[in-house]
Image (cartoon, rainbow over all chains, first blue to last red; front, side, top):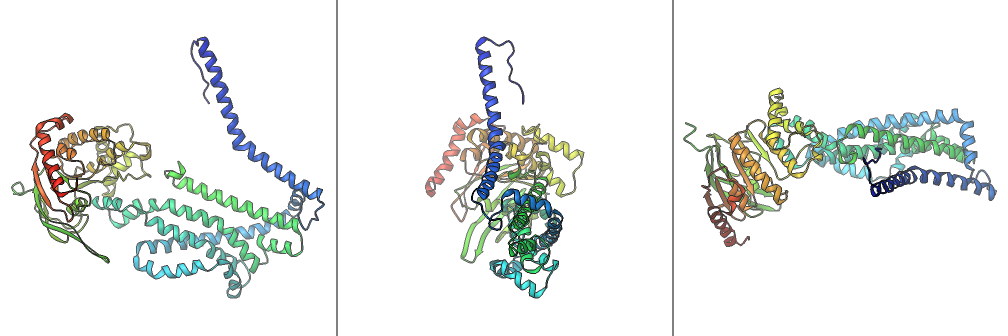
Length: 280
Length: 258
């Protein structure tokens, strides 16, 4: 921040300067107040209220544990929770990477060939319309218990946003721009690399962000049904034995994992397309 | 031998679109020719097929009937050395200003120090020097359009096609662009074919103005503009200039498009 300064100020200017400095200080304070202080206070107040409510109304632990109880459980059973987390992370990331590759390939095929588009389109619409949760029990039948089921369920969960965004992205180059590079005698390959793909990237990234947050959700639902490991399994197990603090601990860890993935995707996006309007 | 024939020869060219909902006769038949180094302006009502004509002439779209020759060569597919500027500047956001100007050279694998110098000189002539390493979005609309003109001229094309290049600019910027483009066109000696909605702009920049009818576009007048170049903006107040703009306006009034 640069200091406000006037050389050889007159009396009136000195007064102005003091006033301006006051205004700048006020603006700085408001920035901190709105930017971090208020949200932080709100969070702390909420937790405090929750803690007090549990003790005040003498709620049993299996109904609603207090934040401190959840925290204690998390510390006590940290190694177990981490091993479940690891399983969920593996299922999510392997599934997500498969969906990413598959989604971009299928999306590119649809975007470049009208016939492929017409052939695949009805199937995609139908597949997408089926509530994905109902696929989970079927996967148990088809593939069985374990990691493979989980991975496939993540693929099912994250594939569609990537396909759709890739198709939209690759088709969104302006016709006049395509004619312009045609006038520069660009071949198909150059048009793809220098025009279509950069144009597509911002769209693909919005699909990737949706898919990235969907991946842990998919993994957890998969673990509800067809797994004896992972945070989804931990959650089911905890609820089944009315171990609510453990259930809360699992949910918190799942959420932190989801938020981490989201910020990772945002980071990659920021590094890949710094030129896009959303990143400026 | 080439010098005796016209530089561009258009013979009974027509364009018809066949769509599921029917046949749209967009253009022609149209015939005209013009010489190397000339600036030809096209004016006509919206939707009269001016843009279609430009694209057909540049080989970007196929014609349905007729023949086009440029330098006595039959046009089939995109012409080899043309520059095109559209109403939108169509700069690529992921490239700097200089990288945008260099695009045509890059597509032909011809980026070297010589072409970089050429790009910088063009930018300077167009009054955008000092912005080479900026991103396009940091520039105003008028400056962006100048960058796209530099890009079109980079490889010294023998023909420049401008499709309503200044329609999106404010009146003052537009005047300024007219002066800049005139200077550049004379300096680069590039045969220029441009489309505009503005009668004054057409007369100011052109050696010849072609007036088109409503769709399907046909030529209803073809006017030589004898005012010597370079012209200053005040030439628009001269009787000779006004005579021509009136003549064009009367065509439009008769056609009921004004």
